[in-house]
Image (cartoon, rainbow, N blue to C red; front, side):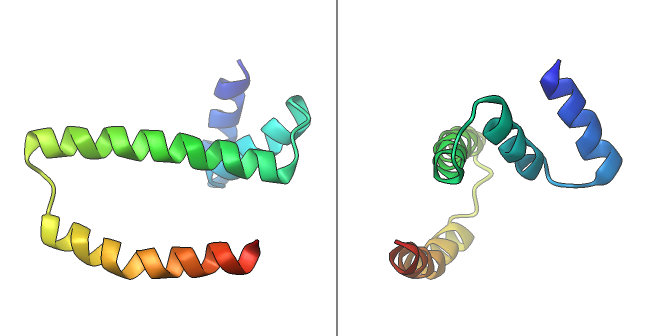
Length: 85
């Protein structure tokens, strides 16, 4: 029921569902901001890995674009992680 209500709010307000669910997790489950970010990161990793494997099985992955993004985003993510710690 909560998911349906948040889904309705996302459609109504055009606010990203991640923002609304983060607030819901913080209030309903009494989580801290760090716990919510960790939960979201773990979920995103699993979801994107599964989606990527499915796309690979269909042969719809453009590997040149993938490796280009990987090459550029890796150092940026590492730098951001080190500066926020």
